Image 1: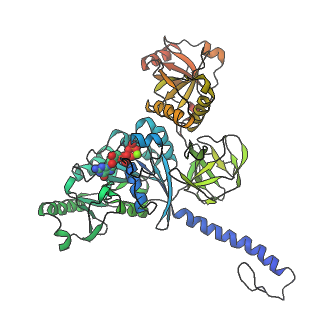
Image 2: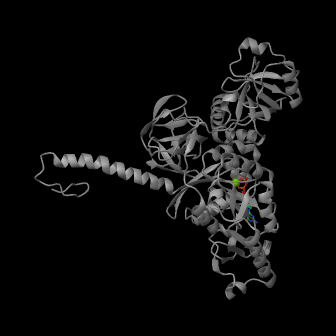
Image 3: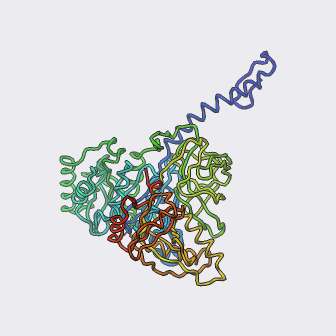
Length: 569
Ligand SMILES: Nc1nc2c(ncn2[C@@H]2O[C@H](COP(=O)(O)OP(=O)(O)OP(=O)(O)O)[C@@H](O)[C@H]2O)c(=O)[nH]1
Ligand SMILES: [Mg+2]
């Protein structure tokens, strides 16, 4: 008799029930062994990374081109898309298309060359840095884009520092080589000097600006010469050859050829030596040159990145390491976004899977509510498109729909002892009242605002003993107010009016201060007591000077820039 599952012969002479036993045991051991092997294999082929930089360096353009080279789209969209042209997959939000800037991070999952890639495009503007920093908690490495004409800009430096603190490996893409760029040796030197990181150029630019002809791959000693394609929409044609190949040499003028050869020699003798360990520890960065809009060097970046970047690593939770192979499923929510698809007006919670295997319909422990929830609506995300996903592995970012109780930072797990504390909070620096000018639309106004608060688009404060119920919004930067107003109108049909509030500084008081203790505080003129959304008391000041004066006049009362419990580990 042959087993119907694995086709092994089960002798007829065996005791009754032999086939049934064989099936039960076989299933247990077979699946167990199979699942361990397959989960390890699945983890090893995951690459989860973010693209970061100062505004306008070309993150979204590079994202589009990585999708093009990764085979995830046939035609790359343009950030500067005119009418009738295809818009980017990454900047899908109405306001992003209108403004040509990224406002919110985008998740794009696709397969390429045996890898499962989870790519996150982030906004560069500092007013949206909360969103970008949350994304950095969810990735295993980053691609840092630098405008080769400008070098390291302030926001790149800040983001780099966050990556370094977290020990995230960094890959560098020197973009816009098709435009006049700074001397490449100087750019490398700047990485080492300003960021204090070793820089190893994997490839080297040939020519500069309009004369930019391609790159020399130092690992294979081959030239990659490029031709411009219309709008950089299709893969750029590539001709590959050794530096002394007459066909290659013939395409370069004497001066460009000599300069390239000399620079390469200098790198060989005086440059950084390749070291996988320092790259993985975030202490040195592989550097790629190219031009995203012209598709120059994108394939080399993608292949080089996949070759050297890490698969998901263990996560540290309250001093304990949770390895991705841990059999318990666990992950945390780092982003919430509503109304991504006008056809489905719902909200998606984005979870980064950290350990174990996710299976659709599984029941998990939700840290905030301490309840069991069933995850039945799970999606693979590609920009604003989604597709049901039945299983996911560590490294994957998936979207969960239909759970209003989920908040940013929540852990979902089959082992309630696991609770990640990954999400950083930022101190607001801009404060405004948000009025609802149309009382007939109060419901839409409130519903929209509550949703945007839950997404972390903006924060809200509640003045102590307030005379009016007008929400007081708090933001890291004023563009967040603009996004709030735009989305209220666009997604909820609710008008709003901003009124600047008279404060510029907020400080948190010790949690749990009693009403009487709060009333006993001596407040400088113009300052006010308020509560954040978790009912932690804060003081609003007109300036730093006033905050310092408060410290002098209220001895023993500690002020902090963030609620102490919510500070990142
Ligand atoms: N000349 C040239 N322009 C480029 C290149 N890459 C991007 N750009 C242009 O640079 C501008 C900004 O590009 P984006 O991709 O939106 O930049 P970003 O970093 O995503 O910007 P934010 O998300 O708003 O921070 C656009 O006009 C692009 O067309 C390039 O290689 N060469
Ligand atoms: Mg962008």
